[in-house]
Amino acid sequence: MHMEVLDVTPELATTWLTRNTNNRPLSKNTVQQLAAQILRGEWQLTHQGIAFDEDDVLIDGQHRLAAIVKAGVAVPLTVTHGVPRMAFTVMDTGRKRTGRDALALAGEANATHLAAALRGLHLYLHSPDSSWSGGSSVTSNDQLLTLLEKHRGLRDALHHGIALNRGCRITVTAATIGWYVTSGERPDVDQSAWQDGVVTGAWLEPGDPRLTLRNTMLSLAAGKTHRRRDDSREHLLYYLKSWNAWLEGRSMKLLRRSPNERMPQISHQPAAAKFDVA
Image 1: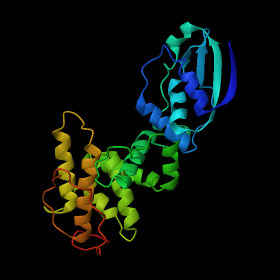
Image 2 (image 1 turned 120 degrees about the vertical axis):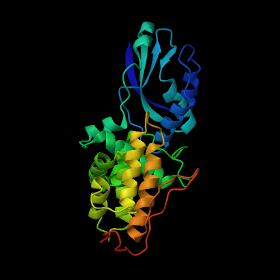
Image 3 (image 1 turned 60 degrees about the vertical axis):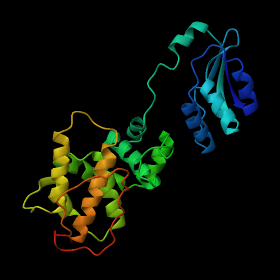
Image 4 (image 1 turned 180 degrees about the vertical axis):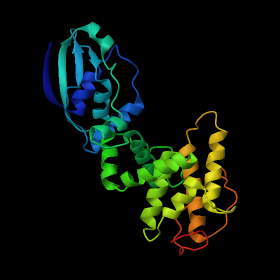
């Protein structure tokens, strides 16, 4: 068995794929993600590459080769020849490094919540219909780290998101994104009264948007037997609707989400004093 590092061109990758006669089904999604990484310049040479067995049959790396073909760009790969055929049974059985893992290795605290908030923020910023679905999601750990570098304030927002979650059961992702985008759009507003009201509900009268959001979140949490995939999107919509009403001094006694309702834009009206807005 011997190894070498080669710049694998799309033409060479195409040729080698013809030797892929005994492998698992190809995942188009995985190929798309790898090709996108190549085109973004995120490809890095590692010990993981492609492998051929004693009969020169491709037994590992079909997705990498297919991605090179799709991207149309040559990249360096570690190529191993003469791998024992039986070794195929133990290849790719390790756990893939997640976004949480990448953030934790970079020294970030609360990596699980931070990864989810980064992905949710990206969808909030790039999904016009607020569906939080489709091709706009973060697909690589490098993208996640780049997104954090661009939105450094999300680290501080996460602390507020965790406090709001503990106080009223709103998802950490929704609360973090809500705090981050409202603080960014309206740095003139002191949000301490907002957080205190949502977390404690103390001394708030019916119709106060903070109390309405708090009661809505607690009611949803009490009635849940399982977590829906769109909980964070729904919670963020409620958060922003309530925050806008609080800022403008409007009474809000009921929170609802209409089918296909768009995510609210941050209000830029002057802050009102009705509900203790600074």
